[in-house]
Length: 593
Ligand SMILES: Nc1ncnc2c1ncn2[C@@H]1O[C@H](COP(=O)(O)OP(=O)(O)OP(=O)(O)O)[C@@H](O)[C@H]1O
Ligand SMILES: [Mg+2]
Figure 1 (cartoon, rainbow, N blue to C red):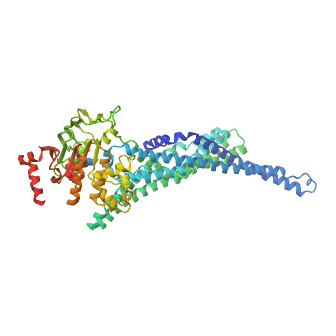
Figure 2: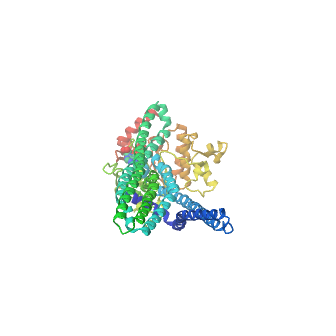
C-alpha cells in the first residue's frame, strides 16, 4: 500500500500538468458510456417500429399508412450513438496517448537531469547495469502501462459510476445488497495485490542485478577470455537469470490469480442478489411480478458490478510493473544531491596556497580510510603524492574536487573552506586527469573541448600541442575530426591519457590534479606525458599522484601516504637523506630502470 501511495504521488507529479486532457477525456468517456447505455433502448424501439411497419404493410387495409420513416429515424440515431461511442473513445485515446508520450518523455529527462546532480557515491555503489535498467526496463513498464491501462482505468471508473447511478435510481435497497460483498472483495484484492507487489518489486530488482551482471561481463569480456572463464560467466548468468525467472513467475501467479478471484466474487455477488432479491420479493410490498422483474434486473447489475474491477485486474500485472517502476525511478529521484552552498562564492585565484588540515574520511561509516591527513601546498608548487596501492591517494583527490566531503578536518584555500565555494566554480577551477581516462562519443576535437564546448579550434590545437598529442592527431586521416565511437579501444591507453590531459589543459584550471597519468605506458609515451605534464604544471598549483617515482623527482614536495596517513614529506633529496619508506621505494624502482 505504501508503494501504491508513493506511485500515486509519483504519477501525480508528472500527470497533474495534463489535468485538462484528463478532464476532456473523462467527459468524452462519460459521453461514450452514455451512448453505450442508451443505444440498446433505440435498438428495441427500432425492432418495434419495424414490426409495426411490416404488420401494417402485410395487411391491404392498412398498407397505405405503413411508413418506414420512424424506423429510419430511430436507426439513424442508433447508428449515430455507436459512431459517437467509437469516435469519442478514439479521440480520448489520442489525447491519452499524447499525455503518455509527453509525460514519460518528461520522466526520462527528469531522471537524467537528476543523475547529473547526484553524489559520486551513488555511482560508486550502484552498478551501471542497474542504473541503466531504471532508464530502460522501468521507464518502458511505466510507458506501456500508461499507454494501455490509462484508458481502461478511465473507462472502468466511468462504467462503475454509471452503474452506481443506474442502480440507486432503480432501487436503493437492492443497490446496497449488490454492493454488500465489496468490502470482502477489497480485502481479497488487497491481500493478493500485496503479495504480487512484493514479487514484482523483487522481479524488477533482480532484473537490475541481472543487467548489472551482463554489463560487467561485457565490459570485462577480454579478462574473461584471457582467463578462460566463459563457462563460469555462464554459470553466474544462469544464477541471476534463475532469480529473475523465479520472481517473475511468482509475480505472474499472484497477479494472475486476481482475475479469477474477482470472477468468483462476481458469482458470489450474483448469488447474494438472487437470495436477497427473492426474499425481498416474497416479503416486500411489491407485487410478485414487479419484484421478480427487479430481481432479474439486479442479477444483471450484479454481474456487471465486478466488470470494471475485473477489467482492471486483468491489467493488474502491467499496473503492478508500473507501480514498481515508479518506485525504482522515484528511488533515484530521492537520492541526495551534491551539496552546493546556498550563497557560494566564486573560487578566487590562489593567493597563498591550499591546506589539507587533519582530514579524516570514510567511504563507508565506521571504516575510516584517511586518518588525519595534513598537506600544505603553496601557490605554484607541485606536490607529489606517492604511496602503496590503496593508501588513499585517489581518495585525497576525490576530496579536493568534492566528489566526497571530509568527515572531520577541512580543506581550505587561502583560509576559506572549499565547501563554501560554488560547486560549479570549484569544479571548473580544479582540473583533474582521472586515473582511468574517459573519452566520449564525438570527434577528437569535441573530446578535447569537452570542458568548454565554446572553445575555438585554435585553443583545441594549442591544448593538444601542450599535451604532446598534436602530431599523433594530425597523422590520423581525419585529424581532429576523427570520430571517437564506442570502440574507444582504437586509441591506446597512452593516447587516451594524453587526450584527457589536453582536455584538462584547455579548461585552464587553477589547481591541477593528475592521478597516475603515466600508469601502464611505455617509456617513450611516458616521456611524452612527462613533457606534457611539465607544460601543464608550469605556473600552476598542482598535485601529481604517481607510482613511477621518476616522474616526480623534481616535485617541490613529495608526500608519502601509507594506510591513510602521511608518513613522510619533503623534497626528493630530503626524503632520500631521511632514508625511510620513500628512500626504499626509490631504490627498489631504480633497480628496474
Ligand atoms: N568508492 C569507494 N567506496 C568504498 N571504499 C573505497 C572506495 N574507493 C576506494 N575505497 C577504499 O579506499 C582505500 C583507498 O583507496 P584509493 O583509491 O584512495 O587508493 P590509491 O592510493 O589511489 O590506490 P592506487 O595507487 O591503487 O590508485 C582503499 O582501501 C579502497 O578499498
Ligand atoms: Mg588511485
